[in-house]
Image 1 (cartoon, rainbow, N blue to C red):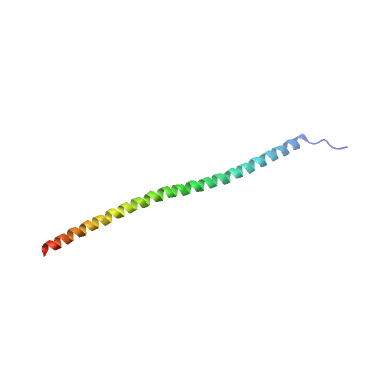
Image 2: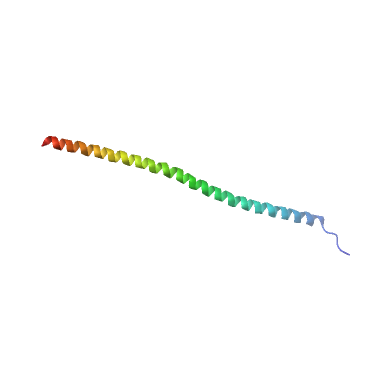
Length: 82
């Protein structure tokens, strides 16, 4: 005579199966979130670097312009002394 199946074991097997499915979905979501975080980090770096380079170029332009103005004034003074 076959023994009746333990109802507790049946429920535990169903729970294990359900938890396994949830774990797989959670792993998939974790991978997707990691990809999204990487993309956001790349965009953040681009947004910070781009304006930073533009601002640096502007400062460099101002510096060169000031030096050119100073040199022009020096040349004019030297020409007046002759």
